[in-house]
Image (tube, rainbow, N blue to C red):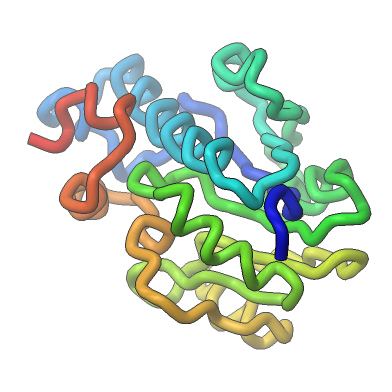
Length: 209
């Protein structure tokens, strides 16, 4: 594939509710809501920095109900679409994917990948002519789902999503892809991401010490 040929939808949960198992990671266990929201925002923005720097990404739709996320992404070229939390993650992804250019392969990327590198994402997106997914570091979750032009995204995120996506016909991506596979749900995950090298916003919160 040539460059700039894939559209991606990225869901960003409301910062006040996002990443509950990380609460306290940004402030030594205190769990201050403002510091926690700052960390959740940092994870998302570092992920999106890598997305926007990837050569193969043509368009990005961010689905979120959080106004802070929208303000932070103003002027980046990302399209912001309001999420309806009650509808659930998969419904939000379907909604966002419908707003991507229809003549492109498309995909869904999780927003908690602060160690993601643009070149890793480009390597994964080279498979966008096939229905494919990238399993997370544990092997049971999914960080990226891809679908060919004209095919439905058919996201099945949630517990056991890797098996669900495989059952739907998606092919698991090979390769190490450490930053793409290292999603962050817990402080231990965050330490592993730090060892890979996280983006500046996450690193600026001193969670890597």
